[in-house]
Image (cartoon, rainbow, N blue to C red; front, side):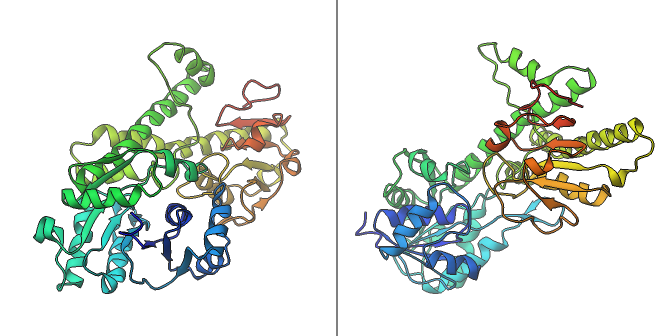
Length: 427
């Protein structure tokens, strides 16, 4: 394998690209990482990291010191190219934006050579890998590609989506199975040989890139639908004056029932985004998937309604007070526990809305970041203890630091159920 792939280029050094680059480099394969973020490039070349992921810093530092990993802004020649760039929405219509993939393809096209492998790792709508192949072919008419030359093509192209959990990326990159969909069987086989450099899980070959693309979207849509069921139960339970945490705990005693836990919504770049890619590809058929997305997207608005009701209760309890004197404490901004990732985070969406709608002090407790992101106005990043005297405590993310603490004495709005059975006041 190392003779076939002496140098690997990873385009995009974010939450997936950098761990993947580090993993290949840890197997003593030379890796050139490419990114547009100069600060990220500088950090990596110092042996540091610009994101939070357990154990990643140790691997990156060792790989850089040993000369197997370096970062640059300009693509260089390599034997294999892995594209791990974002696939956001276009504006507000939730159609997938492939501009980053197109830009990455056009950036590597000048340095492609016969025998190279190009793998799209970015989570993508169905057909994105074929479109990438088209962009590469347009840029390099002197080379042949699978869509026209089949097995005899100069360039091999495949799709291999990541399937890892933030906070456990370094372990799951190794242990999880990988789904690989090449544009030809030969493309699939070559890509599988590449990933077997570090993957201990099975490299499962899909019949086409489209199947591999849809598999990743299906996995996250399945999870989204199940979360939507839990979130909808929480709304119904609130209206019926039922403890949803007790309800789910009892229902899950059935041997064939496993209801997930509700929360303030769904975040992250995958579950909050991928189902819309299916909806955009089959808008008339994806009715359940669309509804689940709408349920989860609406949950932050329901949470805000509960906050407004709690503020109103404070004012009714003391008619001399104004809303500007009510102190709110928000616990957690990340999209899931114990990470610093704020992408598509419903907690951040809720906090930003409160910055605009609530005139009083807003204290944010988020132990995984060193400063508040843009758009947080008068909010103050503080510690758990410093927020103790707030009038209303809104828990949005069940970080380990919160799970080990007692519920605040005043009004709490617990959206993750970690304080529900503790003594205190729950609104």
